[in-house]
Length: 112
Length: 113
Image (cartoon, rainbow over all chains, first blue to last red; front, side, top):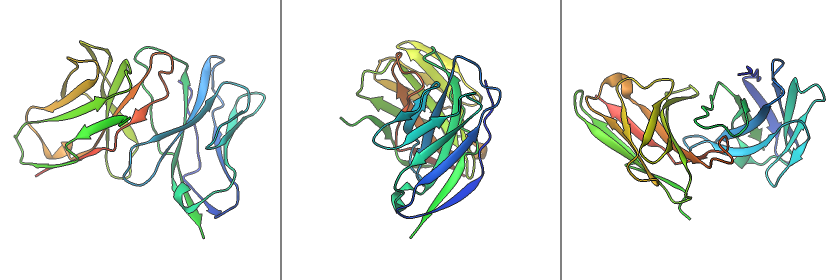
């Protein structure tokens, strides 16, 4: 599996866009980029995933560089409720018994 | 829909005692997982199941057993609890067609004295 590198922590002002980077320079052609977040003491929550095209849903946007070696999760208007640890995970798509590995992630602090 | 429900939410055990954590999902998902999370750490996979009657070991399976007798339920057992098993346990489930899109439960906090 491709390894991911994320900054350990970031701050963002409430109402501004939060841009969370993730490096995955060893990503393979059939590996997707997944983003999850974990709000304090809660179970992780799926946010978004993509292969090579940019993706957007009601929670966030995912921008993947053309060479696919890095990506950015964008929360367009961060709120205090977005304070959480954000995990970037690279895995092959639907695969029986896939084991998602949640590493250190980025601790995002949204400040008033 | 309730999604993924874990019981109990909190439990305190003495060393050597046994207990079972129950995970129930009402989304008809084929895959189910048990993770543990220690303070300040990421999640580590204990065991998982790709279908009723089948289980497999994850990253940290020692000291735990699991069973999936019904598709909607995934049980995690500790036969002889140890202080090293003090942790928060999360259950998750996913569909075959979206195996990496996991729905997690709220967690079960276990303390072993």
